[in-house]
Length: 329
Length: 275
Image (cartoon, rainbow over all chains, first blue to last red; front, side, top):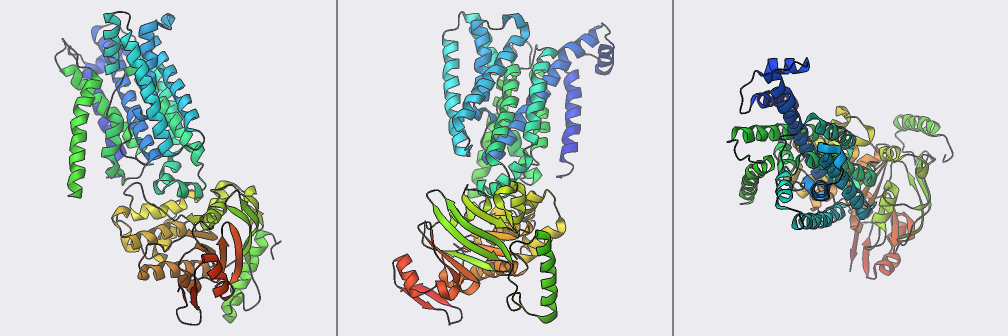
């Protein structure tokens, strides 16, 4: 099971992506549409598949992979299966940055890219405050406290922005954006998301050995020659890039980063280093599947993606708590 | 011997082992004492003041002393977890001049409190010992598991094991690292008498197979039985280092531990208890 997990998940991902390209209110021929779009042909199928569904599918995949990977990395670093990537404040920071665009009309020259770029900036600022606050010690409890404090602060600022929204429409737009969605976003959004995703993933991937070494605690990791303080900061940096860019582009997509690593853990024999890749693949699969479900629901009042993942994720989480409780009875 | 190039030391070692096998004499009997590690004036701010001792190949050195004496601090400093001043030389290389990774290959620490955050398999925990080497040498891992007698636990989850089984698994992890110097911080605390003997003889065997072991230990009777030499610390200062009989005297122990102590090193096993 352990060895075939990644190939299986990869296969699943391809199937789901294909279904995603074919799902929507209008029936199209996916293969010929994709082929036509690549040859810059100008027909209905090419436009729908290439201009609407492809960006949406790719965004869902990358956002899901970012959430799954950052959840696995952060849970490994803090040695706590209940850690959510939102914990380090990067997602709230990104949301605040993006909300400022709606409110102050920042970066108006950038058009549709203003929101994701401001979100990325918000996540980066929150991250630097977090790294400064947690200092060179980078102990789990300090990171969690610093992240919680920053989440509270950015959450309060976000509430204030909502409070003073210039008009009901701006407020509605902001609230809907915060609920999380990958619809109506062009390929240019991917240009913001993808570099941050790749760099963040590579940074985390480089710290696999630290994650494994940390399984037996700080002292064992350090005595094995691993650079704990530096490595921890790298993991936080990588996670913040993943979460910040994902939230900046798609809003809050909750529960994926918490649940996906949690479910996969037994399948990789609980090894935190081997959990990274499967979590990214499964995260991508889950968010893309959720986005397909959103499209299958009646189109008149769109259910936001983040609402769906939370609606499905929370009961699942309750079930996990129930199962955990049974173990102790 | 201390100023020889490491390569020469190794040659000497091979020669020594050869002589040893021919005549069945120990190094000490034929008058060769191999110094693996020498510690001079080791000081950790506010916690440890100028500690000096040499560590010989094949020996188990016991660190004893009251709680807060600096035993764990000394082990942490040797393992590179705490910054220190003074000189620590391993095979004539200054520890401060070698990389953290190289140090980790030569010196491995078993901390006092170890818990696995995840339900890892015993095999994976032991494989962790190979992390500083960046390999997954199955022969070495199996040998370490065999040495620590945890072969039959290999596929079990480490969180399901008893305290004694866990202690052996943690030691197998350190042994898979194949360090020249193995540091163990209170490896027998919280173990029953069976596992205490088990773990101590494991460490003794490891030392005698061409390595050296330093253990921090509170049970003075066990220390007397298994350690070749002892180093007594109190309030961050080294009080005495030497043969078991020289350190475990009623005068010294009574003053350091502020309690009357009964000592009988002639009995089998040796007994050191508070009156």
